[in-house]
Length: 329
Image 1 (cartoon, one colour):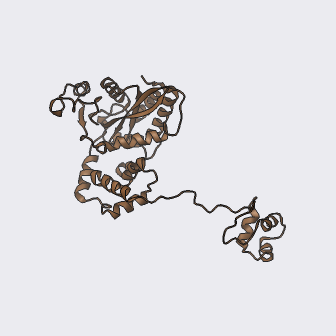
Image 2: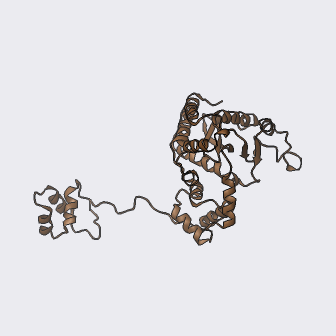
Image 3: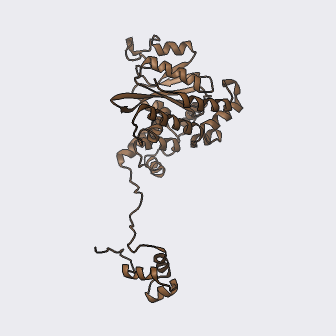
């Protein structure tokens, strides 16, 4: 088969084979074949004679004008910092690099967050541990059965917990928050959810207003938890948990095929431990000068221990034990 050489190649396969088997020095070989010493040295250490492909291993795709518009729109609606925005964007546009996202923001004039929007963002971060963002996301079918993942993330520490259910009902929503109360080391005081029927009767009650008679609302009131709802048809309002949904699924169900529920659950819970105790978060580094959600728990416990139910070390031991013994309903 004919070998296609690079346009700047100064050797052929025959010459390369001689160089590799010769006892001459690289300098002597370069003089004999009128080639650069670097070329002689390069082929001396290789065990093949074909040219190496010059194609890039990773292709950086340019963002389309529509993608840039979408990125700018998300920035205007959330005013998230660049790192948080990048994490959100890459859920739907995995090819979008941080630098490309910044250039898109710059081209649309929203690369700098206005002062008044920074103040709003600061208010968002003023919440102490105990404010959960909660959502439900789909999992792959197993043997024809649908499964749902109920997910909660604490706004201040980024600590997460999730659990697998066969349906998204009000009863399972209540059961999930009960499990959250058992898992999280702090008192749960606030909760933000979307307007799904498993959480509210907002769109079935008269006047499309929360009646207060929904099972989940009643239970939250009894537990003294302030249940808040996102604005209708705006999932970005609950963007923190939406982002973590993508992170969880990209690391588990989107890259692994499971033969049974037990194996899927085990994989999910393994990632839960990794996320809470090992995975680094750039936002935590900026806010608390810590690396992981567990580090944030330790720091918050140092600052305000009275809002916690247990010490960080006790929580860590309990978390590993719960994950090791939990099985979905």
